[in-house]
Length: 215
Image (cartoon, rainbow, N blue to C red; front, side):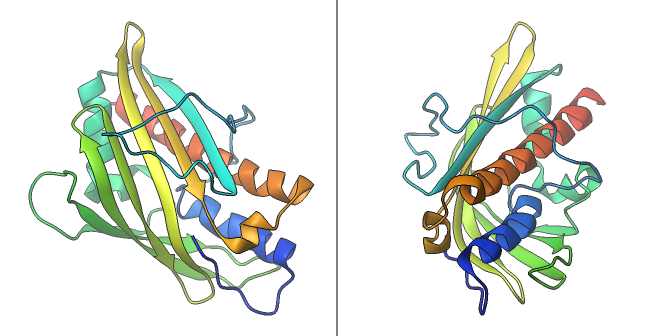
């Protein structure tokens, strides 16, 4: 993805991006801080119909959670995108851009708020997600831009896999972000960006767990 941000030092602009994208693309928020448990930078290879995230991108993150609910129920909650705003506080609006079942050709548009920070004004991102690959009740991969008044993200890739186990449903997710501004990050700045992405993924998974187990 490419981020456009004027008159800011690269590190500060990237950290502003973390605040925005950690909420938007990773659907973080829900009125809570990210769990302490870290996400792993390098996970076992995961694919959906042979496709996966861009593992050469400057920022990648993965995490997973075990949900005490049937696989079909978890899958239905996650792929009923029009109901995301019912269980994710960070989703303001969501709309399918196609008709019929959620499948490998589906597209959807959703909005999420970006709070004011020291580096950027309050904003609202509009995210257009296009499903690239989907295997029913097993995996889905989507990608797309996020556009706001102050921030624009050209591309992020997000993969989800679902595995039935004796204890419940194991949900694994991973995401990649690619931009020149991210490639320039090193040390603590890089770790801060990766940590925020991982925290956002953890929050999304926890919300999915709470919703699925409540059914």
